[in-house]
Structure formats: structure tokens, C-alpha cells
Image (cartoon, rainbow, N blue to C red):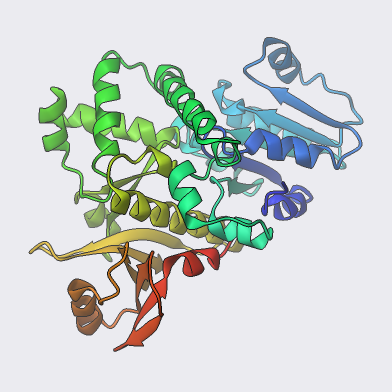
Length: 373
């Protein structure tokens, strides 16, 4: 299956380095090799492999290489300056694609040494919108059960998908997190992970989690930041025109793998909406250079709307998520009347779409299938 971003990445490779990042097993290596197959003399090198690392360190690939793929290069000391040197001295016909399964800003922010030399593309799990663009048949329920990672999504049966997820979790918590920072209390880290799976969609209190786990709030926050760094979870903060102030408030936590959400069908559905919206926001940022963010709305007295998509720090849409309730949320209605922001209510099981007082009540599957990318 061709990923939608392929043709955009191919064009960007003609101009600059392309940094392809995203969750482990979201399809980065597959996509990189698929792109490489369109070149005559491509070379794929993984920094984790000893022999490949020697070639990378010595820059000993053949001169006629027309596509150089460097996987997990961010693990190399001073990788930015290394990549700058390779790009500035490469033959004119050589293209460079760099992939990684961690946020590059965790290792060192992509700053001056690569300024003007790269395009960033974030490859997220599959979504209704992406499969719709590829004319692949799917359903919302399948995504809620399997998640959007390619291997479990396309598994022949549910058991294979569950086995993949078990291995995936163990790999993340026993290997990947140690690439970011040494964890002395792995049991505590695992407990935070497990607790988050049951608290999706609710504002997270570091103090409350710390009491449940038996570590300090600072340590809990650090654990969550590590899980963010390896693309296990992402945080959604309350909307505020003052972004710094927004970051001080309690975030909500969602998983890139929707199928990790436990017990609550409504929470799993909300998680899927969150990751679908985030994927679209990433695409708009990476491809169109639009300044978009995902937030939620919350007043001091606890009134809350699930999501707010912003463009240039102005709310583009307020979004409330419901499994089956077609009646307009009272909170969404109040926010709409008070602030006059565009408002949507996405309903999983909805017979008829309608609009009332500038609030649209829409079928979630249809809306999510039409998101950008």
C-alpha cells in the first residue's frame, strides 16, 4: 500500500534533506524503502547496525548514490553537524532522507546547523482520511478495535493484532525509553503507563498520579515526557491566547495507538478522534506550513469542550465528541453563544446530520474521512 505522503516527500527530496519521524512501526522504514525503490542507486543505512554505522562514520557510500537513507541517525553524537556536512558537500544529484522513531528535538533541537536545509514530515498511524484517499475500504469500528498501526490493522485476525501490541508495549518500555534517558524505577514507569491507559480524555493531575505510583509529581511528569518523546502518548493542553499560560494547566493525555486505551468505549472513540485531528494538524504544518495546534477548552468552573483546533492561535473549530448522543452538548452551546467560535459535535452513531444555531452535528466517520491527509 502506498502512503499518501510519498509523492510529497519525493518532491521535497529534490530541494532539501527530508526528516521523516514518527512512532516506531508506523511505517517509516517501509516508506523509506518504497521511496528508495524509485531510485537507481539508493543506499539504506541504519545507525543501529554496526556495519552500517562504520559506513556512515566514514561516509564511504558510492559516489553514484542518488538517494541516501539514514535511519536512526539522531543516535549519532553531534548528528546535526554531521548531516550538515554531508548535505553541503554531497554531489548535486544525491538526495538525503533521514528517518527516526523519536522526536528529534528531544536529542537536540533542529537549530542553526540545519536551518534552511530540511523539510520535516511526521508519519502517523493510518487514519480514515488516509485510507479514504487511497480508496481502501475500512470502518471506524475496525480502527477502534485494531488501532491505526499498519501491522495490527492489516493482521488476519484479532489474536495476531493482540500479540503485536503486547510485543510493541514490551519493546517500548524495555528498550526505547532508555534511548531517551536512564530509568531507575522501571516498575514506576510501567505503572504510570498503565494508569494513563485508563485516564484518556480526562485532565491529568501529576499530583494524583504521583500518589498512586509512589513517586514525586516531577518524576511523573518526566515519565510522561519520555513517553511523548518516543511517540507513545501526546498531550493536549487547554486553549489560551497566552500559550505559556496554557502549558501550566492540566493537560489531557492521548495515545498514538488507539487500541491501547482500556475499558471505556467512549474514551477509545475520543482518543481516535484526537489522533485523527493531530495527524491532520501535523500534515497541515509539515506540508502547508500552517501554524495549527490541538487544544481543549475548560473554564475555571469546570465546563469543558473536548477539542479546539486553532490556526494562527485562533480557534478554527470547537469539537465535542459523543458516542451516540445527538442532542447538542450544553457546554458546547454555551461556548458557541459566548465566544462565537465555529462549533461541531461529532457523533459516532448518528442517523441524521443537522445544524442548530451555528452548531453542526455530524457523523464522526464521515467527518474524519474528509480531514486533510
